[in-house]
Every structure is written in structure tokens, then in C-alpha cells.
Length: 130
Image (cartoon, rainbow, N blue to C red; front, side, top):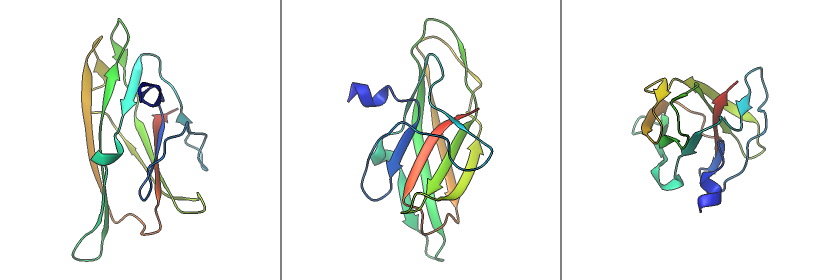
């Protein structure tokens, strides 16, 4: 499990969980697979996908970013990409971390809800914005 936590970009299936190193999604914004010192941890069991009573699709993202280095690190924005069964991008969002800097050995919690995501979304990719 430690090897999986080493990936800086995650791909989580909303139906069946899988992890993989992220390549560039379509569009101008790129997912950066690694930022020195920073480790993303977005356990699949902490991610939420549900249909609201009004029929709106909701996706809740939750996890941590940890600084494993011996010095303070600047945290870039995160890019969230939702993909359908054919791995086409159906939704993209850029979110800012709750803090721009993380001290050595510290971590921050990231929680973000997305309403009205496409029902066709099956996978989420999480990475750093280039």
C-alpha cells in the first residue's frame, strides 16, 4: 500500500477502485504527476458519489496532502478530472489547497464538493496543475 501512496496523481474508479499514474488529460491544463516532497492521499473509501433527491449528481472529494520533505513546500492547485467509461473528459475543476505552504512533516486536509457532475462520470483523476 505504501507504493500506491507514492503516486502524486491518483485515478479512482467511482465504481471499482483502481490507482494509476496520470497522463495528460485532454485540454490545455495538464496534470503533473509529482511535486517534490508532496504526497497525495485520497483513499477511495473517503470519496463520495451520490444522486441528490432533486436528481443532481454529487461528487465529494476528500483526502490529505502530506509534506514528506525536510523543508517547507509550496502547494500548487489541484486539477480534478472526471472521465466516462470511454475515458473521455466529462468534467474538470481546479481547486486551490486550503493552505499554499506546508511545513516539513505536516499535512493538510482537502475537502471539496462538486454538484451537478455528469451522470456518465466513472473515474476521477487528481493531480497538480502545471
